[in-house]
Length: 96
Image (spheres, helix red, strand yellow):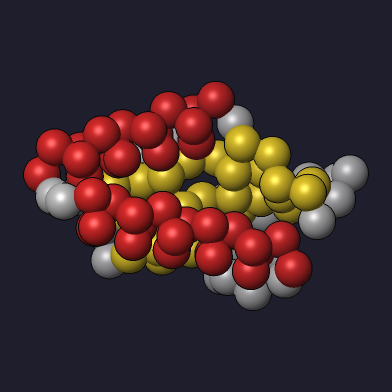
């Protein structure tokens, strides 16, 4: 299935990469990028493998213990990436 990034997902991903670049080495940043790419490939092949959240048709994937990826499968057979969520943030602020 085709993966479509929302503007929010792109912004969140860039913010996480910026944070990683500031706090860690390039090696750790590359590890996160590779993990994300591998996970997106897996999601594109088997989009329903990750559990749904309480919100209808939204799935949650734990990329690393600090970051979750939220996505949904649309009616036109696309995977829409909604947000990359830093789990250290307040969960009440989570908006898809």
